[in-house]
Amino acid sequence: MKAFGFRLLALVLSVLAAASAAFAQDAVPAKQLFGKMVLPSLQRTAPLGFYAKGCLAGGVAIPVDGPAWQVIHLSRNRRWGTPEMIALIERLAREAKAKDGWNGLLVGDISQPRGGPMLTGHASHQIGLDADIWLTPMPAHNMGYQEREVVPEASVLKKDMLHVDARKWTKAHARLIVRAASYPEVERVFVHPGIKKKLCDTLEGSDRSVLNKIRPIYGHHYHFHIRMKCPPGSAGCEDQVDPPADSGCGKPLTQWLDKVRPRPVVKPTKPVKVAKPKHLMLSALPDACVAVLKAPAVANMAAAEFSNGIETNAEIPVTAYAAEQPAQASLIAASDDFSLFVPDLRNIPEPEMRPAAQ
Ligand SMILES: [Zn+2]
Image (cartoon, rainbow, N blue to C red; front, side, top):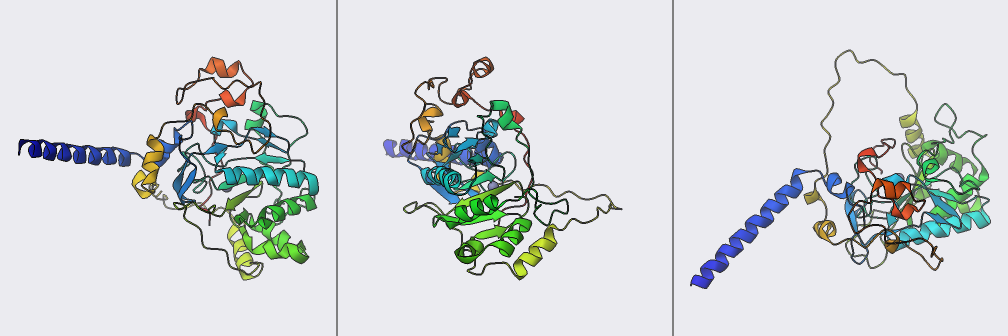
């Protein structure tokens, strides 16, 4: 009986502890929990939940440089995805360079090391299956750290913000976007409505068959966004409903163009009430995301880089810091090795805010 009493007490205590842990987790927005994760979890890779409500177990990083790509905005530490996502970007990079006259990709945000909501920007990009690719080709030279931070957001639109600028838009832009959408594992590609219109007006033959996957959305006039389907066998991943089979070049596009048409700014006469932002809490994410947060980290960033058969630079040391222990600023400054870099999360550049992706 005594033993039972102890067991009961232990049970009550453990329930209380779990409840208070859950309470503590829900006292802060999930973006603060995931936004401070520097390294991926040492787990089998799994995209968990939905693109805009989930996390990523066992993320892998795209190498900062490849034969046909360079990753930008390294301070954001958002070059993490599933192996399928990274392999797809690398494939697109190589094929666009070889066949489309596109001199390699500038790779922007993918996901955080453990995915999840972010402190700045993006409603989606949470499960390692969304990636932003710049609409500016990679330069011929290898960019330094600082140059990668400040890559200009070069819009391909005219000043009217409705049509692509013929001086900036090339057939290679169209071929790159069509190639991305043509991969069967790609669910959707998001572009600005002005770009969608250009593609509707100019694509011919079999290229038109991917128009339905190329979806108009706000922003996305200096980069485009690739969203992959849940990879086969990823049980915890929640698929998005397939886009309609129709090209979307008719009424939906007209409506979108109207939505993004610049309007004169009207000064409000009354003070505008600003709605309190709703933060996604950990409890809204799949339960498995709690384990993703608690799991041990991989030893360092280089250990979690995706290689896909490409030889990595053996010269690069991989022992810069212990897991989750920020490296010293002096160590970072003294090295050109980006894999040593630990982002200063208080100082992430603010990307353009966009409404939630479709
Ligand atoms: Zn994006």
